[in-house]
Amino acid sequence: MNTEGPLTPLRFDPILKRLIWGGRRLGDLLHKPIGPESDYAESWELSDHRHGRSVVRGGPLDGSTLHDLVVGRGPELLGPGLAPRDQFPLLVKFIDANRVLSVQVHPDDAQGRRLADDNGKNESWVVIAADPGSRIYAGLKEGVTRPRFAEALGSGRVEEFLHSFEPTPGDCIHIPAGTVHAIGAGVMLAEVQQMSDATFRVFDWGRLGPDGRPRQLHVAEALEVTDFSGGPVDPVRTRPEPMEGGTLEHLVRCPYFLLDRLRVTGPASVGAADRSRFTALVGLGGSASVSYGGESYPVGLGETLLLPASIGSCTMTAEAGEATVLACTLP
Image (cartoon, rainbow, N blue to C red; front, side, top):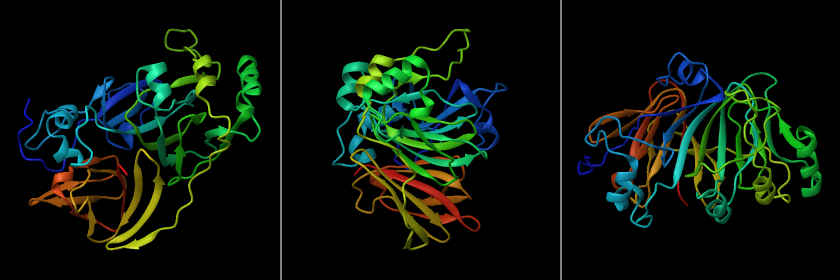
């Protein structure tokens, strides 16, 4: 495995996940290499999880895994203050909800280790597309207690206890661990989360899995990890700030990641100038490119690029008009 070449901006092969609620927009809209099936649900763009590890595509480190780079070259990749680690800290993915996802909840770190042999899972969504009438379910309505919710689970009356709203492209929704949630049919989004695949399924709308049987629920675990004090969750409210080459929105600030949205109209600086930490860039609209070492690295809709800490800041330029890009790193 080649991990000795120079670190440059890194692109990875997508890891495609087929699930019963998926569709075809990962290929049709984001140009992922899907097959003829109609159940492509997720594209894991950056992953260092046992359920899928990203592999570098192209460049001097072609074929290396993200995991090998984290373990072998952690200070250069992550940042000198963020290494050593034995796992990349974030999972970046695109999700196509052709059908509504199950109602689910994620554990915090301690619960994840105890109940799922995994990390906890705090996550944030940025909506790319939403059909008219689609829904996001995020949090329980005010006043819902554990006994009331447990009774609803037993009677199949879960939806009436869920806070929901019709999403708009561009909405950012932050889902802390312990928040009951579901992505409704017709929604496509980008997700940034802790490196975890710990999910407890609360309710599955009465449907059957591919084997003709109801999919497994995790009611006891879900009731244990649900934060009944959390209440409803709505899209975050931000105000764009001017920056050189466009505007910047601070979407999410949490202990696990920082998430910004850049709308770029001219040359803009991306990456950590002090080489203290990595930056993951996720293209949400338009077409942009990052310049480094005389090379150009595209970041268009559906493309993800990892800037290692050691390369410092780079210049990103919109190819035509405006490009929208998420920038994510650690606090």
